[in-house]
Length: 114
Length: 117
Image (tube, rainbow over all chains, first blue to last red; front, side, top):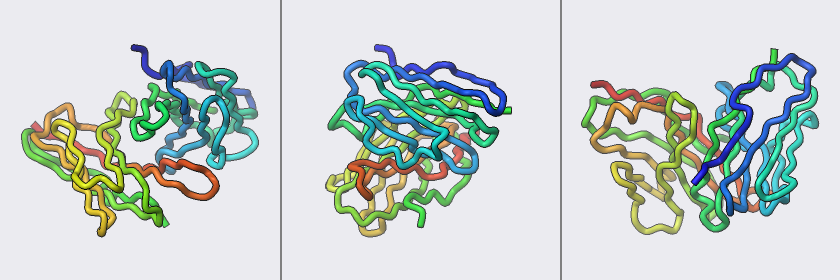
């Protein structure tokens, strides 16, 4: 079975540009999570969805960040406009309902904003 | 206050020996879960082991075991018979319910384990 799929794996962009990160969760999983990992702040939960509905977006740093989940098999995290401090590895993870303890992470997208 | 504290930025262990990675947590919830994840140099996050706050026995998964001491609020990871492939960053995390959301997973800063041959 395919795991969580993220694209792109690496993204280099210039400050001010729009960046869109994509995630395909494991089929059948009803929870989807977006995390950001930096050296300074470690791994932070940005937002999570249950059955395509955003449940908690309190971790989203500011209005420049937005996330959507139009259907059960696809989610996006958008940064507009991007800033150098957004440089990080962004992980998407999914889990199946009651088995919340076992989140499956994607390989991550390494974002560099110059 | 930090919810998850991993006091060991780095640990070294000899191959085939056991190693304990420390984790303490802070929550006022009665129902919570504790996790350990492994992140090798390739970057992916790999789930290792889970302990629920109401679980009577310590969780075990192969060479991994979780030394759960509820009164002390600690959830240390024990890796037995270390292998070179165990060299990685290890993260302790806690799921609890905070504020208005019904779920929150908070990660510690991690411990970098190096297994020496």
